[in-house]
Amino acid sequence: MASFGSKKEFSKRDMNFFAEFTAAAARATRLIGYGVVLMVVAVVAIILTLVFFIVRNIVISNEVKQLEATLASDEYKNVRSEAEKLSALLEKTNNYYYSLFQMQKQVDTTPDVKMAITDLIGKSIPSDTRITNYDISGTALTISGETFLPRSADDFLHELNKNSEVFTTQCDLSINRVSPENFGDVPDFLKEDGTGVYSDVVYHFDITGTLVNEVWITVSRFSKEDKKISSLGMDVKEPKKVREVYQVPNLVNIEVNNVKYELVGITRNGRDIKKEDFERIKSQGEYSIVMTANTDIGLYYSEVKEKPADNKTEGENKESEATK
Image (cartoon, rainbow, N blue to C red; front, top):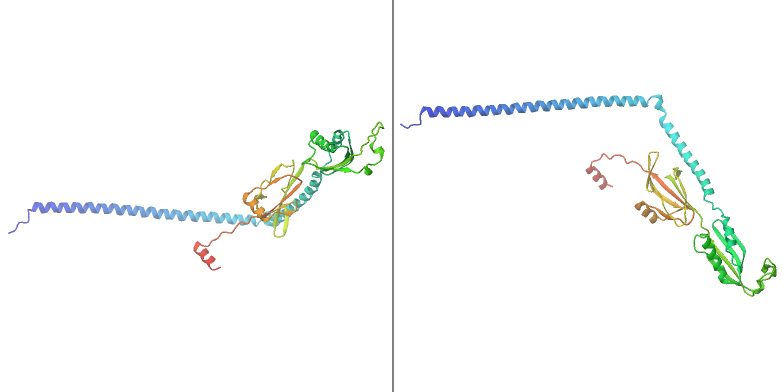
């Protein structure tokens, strides 16, 4: 008869089996407990989130109702119409200001005649030279005269420039010999003491040049919508020295009364600049001018419109573009 071991060995194996089974059951019980706790926490979190959004929606709804009630009150009933009236008044005021500005500019930019020039001419005339005529028209000076020696006219011009910076650029000097029959009467060549000055050679000369003077830069800004143009009331008027470089400030993008504008055009002395020049200036964001004469710059802007939000998905947008 085969032997299958003693009873003690069977009892030992049974005890080990029950011990392992009990331990596994305890682990399973703990895991189930943890799962229940996590589920309870998740449910509580979801309930709290729902409560938060419900309360938030109630608060927002109450705020919206209060705002609607406020806007429906008599105080705010005519706000839009009043805003339109004020906007029209502001535009009218800016245009009126621009008109006054232009009138003042005409006065300020009109060159004045410096009377000290006449004294300077008298002190610089050579002894063998006489002035027959001089004319000052704005910033242009013309001096005509006669001399016995051609170099005397050069000396005269040199004295003018040496004593004072009279001319903006190099002057033009023309000298022509006068025929003896056109000399004029003898008294024309008498000195103050009555003695005569005689010569068979006389030269006529003309000196022309532009006087050193202040030049003015004027920068005016306008709103241009369709065919309607109105002043933005941001004008610059400054005196500058000849050959000074002026750079227009705040060029491409500006903001006036909380409205944003973008540059769409430039005029110089009433004429549009070339398209390629405008594109270059706008891309660089700079516009510099070498001052040689009174210059009037017009800057034209268009209001920047905010683009509405696009709710279409990327796929819908691609489909829409493909079907155009």
